[in-house]
Length: 309
Length: 242
Image (tube, rainbow over the protein chains, first blue to last red):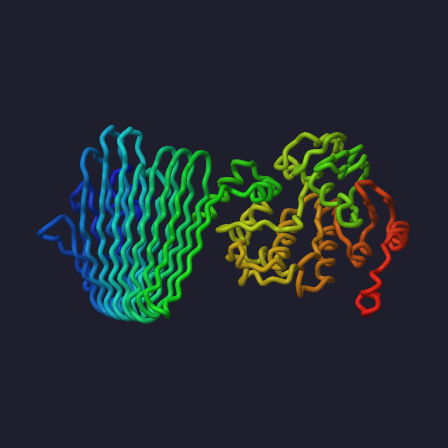
């Protein structure tokens, strides 16, 4: 089974899903617009959509300690792969979902993947969702990823979302929408690094509709070279709720970063806070690490690695 | 081990260091003291290479290090504990101790360094060196990092400042332990504290950017006490400055 993938495919899968071979549990692996492998379990079903490209992932109530891997890899250029994946997570299930997209583009044409992921979490469900995006290849063609994540959280459910895009994506617009019910929690951790002429825009639109719902968005990014980044968040407190947004960016070279964290309270009991910071690496941080024996370059790399951890 | 020869440093219309010459021998614990603004921290930064003197030269084990970088000085065996520890978003206590020691460390070794500064490795090892830690905690971690670095010459810039509830005696124990464990090593401590001056082999008294006295503590301490300015009359009346 391990020989199913060639070296390029293995490298992409390792970077986006920490796997180099067929994963355990439920999975659906998509390559160049087609499913190339699928497995279901007694508790997790994966069904192809009939009206549009994509799959429904149906997780039974009370499913515990199981995972779903749905990585997407692109090794051909010249097309835009749009896919709709809907997750239906049953009551009190507790699962890990690993998604992500890796592009290897050795061509001059663009390779683009737009994944639209919709999560429906039933009462008391808990999901850890890990999404990594990665690009590589020697071609001059752009590597574009425009993911959308739409989240519906029912009473007492929790979604913890970790998104990482560190390398090689020419352009991305990432949009996350949340509709939070009573006592539900949404925890988002985002890490982005851009370099050269890359562009990354990330938008969070979160509606805290249920009493005692909460959201925490923690975004850290590094903008190098001549890259541009934009961070936008709209947190709407429509009930007694808690929301916190934190966006930190390190800016280097001739990069540009715009940060717009917006909070709106539509209820007197909405408790909303935000922090935004953009700045270059502090000189004293470099000096401290150099005084431990690191070169200036090594110190810079350590600071960035730590920041994006 | 270290020799400063005729160091001058002028900034913001002020002669901060005025012809400083001094020697620090192997296996010594040296205290540098003097009033605020006397140039103590500037000397430390000039030794580490953070500031460059306008003139003069610095020798370390016979090698002229005046024009070499901070990194090269660190590799030669000079270490510096900052007066104001630097915060790092994302880097953990473990990361910093490993970078200091130049190796990966296990829980036992981490416990060794951190327990010496009154912190439990299990509670602190994976914490970020960020604003989530108090000034006192950051200061203790800074000291633990320098203990892990095991430099031939370590400079502590006012290590006692902000040490909060942790005992002063423990701080002194660390200096003595480092001094003993790192063969032929010397420690320079910039301090106003009499307890620290008391453990020093030698004291350097600075004032207005000049070395006013240098020698065994028995000879320098009395000069220091005599040079202390008169206490504030109001404070004395209120019993707060006796």
